[in-house]
Amino acid sequence: MSPATSNHQPSTALQAHNLHVHAGTFPAVRNVSATFETGRFSAVIGPNGAGKSTLLRALLGLNAPESGEVCLFGRSLGSWSRPERSRALAYLAQSEGLPDSATVRDVVALGRGAGEWRFGLLPTRPWTDADDAAVDSALDRTDTRRFEARKVAELSGGERQRVALARALAGQPRFLLLDEPTNHLDLAYALEVIRYLRCEVAGGLGVVAVLHDLNLAARADWLLLLHQGEVLASGPPETVLTPGNLLAAYGVRARVVRDADRLLVIPED
Ligand SMILES: Nc1ncnc2c1ncn2[C@@H]1O[C@H](COP(=O)(O)OP(=O)(O)OP(=O)(O)O)[C@@H](O)[C@H]1O
Image (cartoon, rainbow, N blue to C red):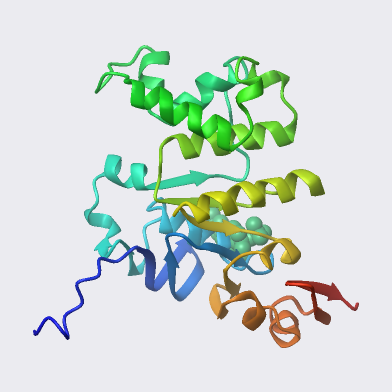
């Protein structure tokens, strides 16, 4: 192949190729293909039971597909070692269990593998200044440094969510996959989480977030709309959040209006 026709660009994406995934015995994800880029805020949307969480878990390698493949940076996820994979892909589950008696700083340090020290396991490598710097940076970027010495038990739900985010960021992943990160958060905290994620995306992180609030999803760069386990639409918000797609996916009539630079979904039912 001549240099002009060869593709020397390394892939920067997390990709699903014709993915079929079962949840239990139920075919929850059916023939899904999608490309999630680094430096892009992608949101997975769709009604309850559409297969969003199942897809997210398959992208993380936590659910093995029945058929199809997940590739990270052009390599099948199955060929990545577990430590390699968990360094590249961070996950924020719907309700993150954080150790109540630990301090915020100790919890964020767990994102660097500090559990080995904290829980008396055999450390596989020494703790370094670079680890401290990564913890400091994650605390600063999530505005949690000011309560780093407090115990997790003393935090509000919104503060806990930011600490969980800081823990994930401390590991310096290439992708962060989040399952309903704004669940149980009030409007201000929800917007704040989206704002922190947007800053990380500007720094090159790939974000893939399952979101139920379509007006928050409208702030993403790219959307994947699932319906009954299949892709109903994908692309920039203005091409996905259309009255026709919303009716097909949710069975709800809605107007989609543009306010300044933002889309707003207004249900009419
Ligand atoms: N262990 C299981 N056994 C059988 N069916 C399951 C199992 N887990 C999930 N399902 C089904 O798979 C489908 C997809 O579930 P999934 O949790 O991926 O959907 P979701 O889009 O994330 O839903 P929600 O928005 O309600 O969280 C649902 O119909 C669900 O009932």
